[in-house]
Length: 330
Ligand SMILES: CC(C)(COP(=O)(O)OP(=O)(O)OC[C@H]1O[C@@H](n2cnc3c(N)ncnc32)[C@H](O)[C@@H]1OP(=O)(O)O)[C@@H](O)C(=O)NCCC(=O)NCCS
Image (spheres, rainbow, N blue to C red):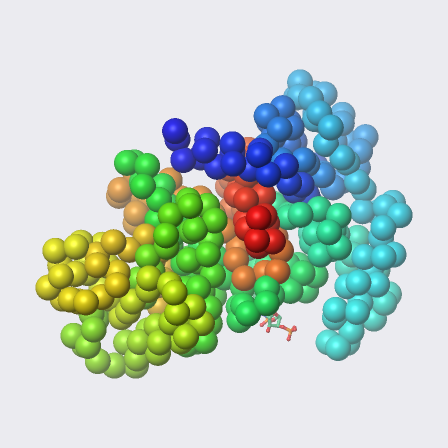
C-alpha cells in the first residue's frame, strides 16, 4: 500500500482530534472536508463560522461534523489567556497582553492543544515557520527530556522506502546537547510513523576519525550524548552518508558500527546541511518530502509550507494524529 495511504488509515483507527487555526484559508476548508469525509481525524476549525460555512458552500464542500470555533467569541478565551499568562509571566507578559495574544488563532489553537481540547494542531499555510513554532513553544512547551524544538522531513523515495531527515527547517546551528536531542526525537518519530526500527546516522564529512576538526568534534560528542540518552538505539557517528547507507562501504570504513550501512534516520550537523540535503533528494531523486514535521514539543503543533496544497494538509494532519498518539504511548 502507498505509504501515505497507509498513514491515513493508521490515523483513522486512532480517532484523534486536530485543530486547524487557519480556518478561513481555502486549502484548510478543502482538507477538512476530505478528512471528515474519510474519517481520518476529528477536525476543529478556527475562524468565523458564517464565513467558513459560506466559503465551503461556494466550493461545494461538506464540512461534515467539523467543529467551528471563533477565538474572538469563545467562552474558553479567558481560560486560555490565563494559561498563557501563567506560562509567560516570568518573561514579563501581562494578563492583558495574554488576553490579546490568545485571540490569535495560532495561539488559541496551541492553547487548545495544551489544554487537551484538541490533540494536535496544524498551521503554516498562511504563517511563517517561526510564528508557528513560537506559538508551540510559548503555549505547549518542550516534551519531557527534550532540549529543543526541531523538525524532520519524512522523505518517501520512489521505491516507497522512507527516510527521516533531521533537522531541515528549525535550528540553524544546534549545539552538542541539542543535536543529541534531535537525534533521539527523530528516531522516535521514525518509529511512530513507519513501525520500523530506527537506524540513526550522525552525519559528517568524516567517518570515525578519517578527518579531524571542530565540526567533526561536535558530531562525535553529540553521538556519545545521544547514546547516553537512549542506549538501546541503533545509532552511530560520525559517519559520512555513503558509510551510513551502503553496507559494503560501512563494512570497510566503519566495521563494527551498529548502523551497518542501513541508516533510515539522518541527523545533519546544521541547518545548511539538512535543508540542502532534503531539497537535493526531493529534486534529483524524485522523493516526496513531507514536513517540516515539528518535533520536541510535549504535544504536536505542526507547521506547513506556505506553498502547500490541501492534500499536504491532509497528510500532515494524519501524521499529527499518529504522532500525538505516540507521544501518549499509544
Ligand atoms: C525557532 C525560532 C522560531 C525561534 O525564534 P526566535 O524568536 O528567534 O527565538 P528567540 O531567540 O527569541 O527565543 C524565544 C524563546 O524560545 C526559545 N527557543 C527558541 N528556539 C527554540 C528551539 N528551537 N527550541 C526550544 N526553545 C527555543 C528561547 O529559548 C526563548 O525562550 P524564552 O522566551 O522562554 O527565554 C527561530 O529559530 C526560527 O524562526 N526558526 C526557523 C528557521 C527558518 O527560517 N526556517 C525556514 C527553513 S524551512
